[in-house]
Length: 476
Image 1 (tube, rainbow, N blue to C red):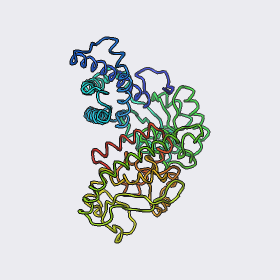
Image 2 (image 1 turned 30 degrees about the vertical axis):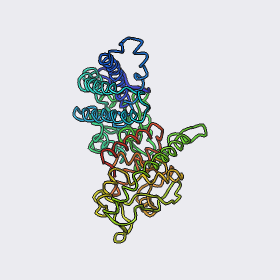
Image 3 (image 1 turned 120 degrees about the vertical axis):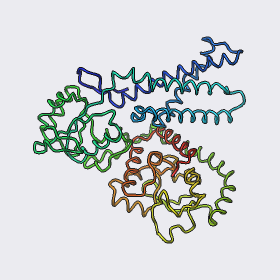
Image 4 (image 1 turned 90 degrees about the horizontal axis):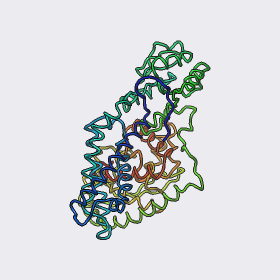
């Protein structure tokens, strides 16, 4: 775990976001491990044939690894380590209940497809109830007591009065006001006394170190896409030598929002590229393709069983074709035909032409609305996944005419074509319908974040989020 340097000052520690999340994960792991031990004890009390001793615990020891690991996966997929949620008791309890229900559903699915007597029946119930109580106790009672010494908001100065300064100030206000305190902005001499994003410009680069000491600053956010002037650069270096963390605005914005600030890129165009370049020794691409093919084969087999029922219901609701084919743009700008279940009236664009679908689009049929909410309309695209046109996870494929239009209005929009489009993706599970230019900009920010950070763990989080959206009918 990487801990950022900080100055040695009096008062409570100003922990960074990663450090606070690390402590939350550590507390959750300890709570789940204890919950497993208590659930094993209850199991032996109910089943008299078993004796609760060291031999029994070692025999069932794999649960001590499996269940805490599964908990961390589900918790991460449900934003349980989002510090805004962690600071709200109602939000914490609600999300904790959702994660516990997801655990039960996942276990039931595995239980029913496993050979008889492979998994215990009631043990997971004991664990689910006990872990819910222990984690609730830790998060709502013990965490404020134990972490109170580290509850000081991280005090930061923004270096630069460009648009990026206002952007990061807004992001902090919206998603991290409980974790960060913006004490001011550093700019030019003629800007002192003005405001950037509602934050006062306190001084210049020559005053930076003194202001940082005066306000007990733990972190500087460099929010200018231009080269730093001589006094600003020297001030930043002086602060770094004193142990104050330095972070580029784009990096902090990613950490806070899960999005890449493409509007801020300027000369720093490298922030829209993947953090690590592809390597022949990297198994990710091969593993992802194997997973794509496996899921596509299984998914298409299951889909074939329910297709006759869906086809009849769709036709009764809106006579016309069952499937819908349309040209989309794939990786590298290559066009291909996507296959979906029809969710709109036939010839939906006869009157309007090519337009973006809206959340309350009157062209969507009654059954089509169900298909979209459950995401069943996307399932035929597994054929495109099998063909290699698409992947399970990636940016949603767009039509060529829309890409041309959005490329003209949004910088770096074509950067999303660096990977295969997906049936679901980071933007789909984090944002609703994009009916405006601003909505498409936000979704691009999420797509570029995925391209920069793609990994099997992130893919798994997206799959879990998508599954929950399907179950809760929250699809788009």
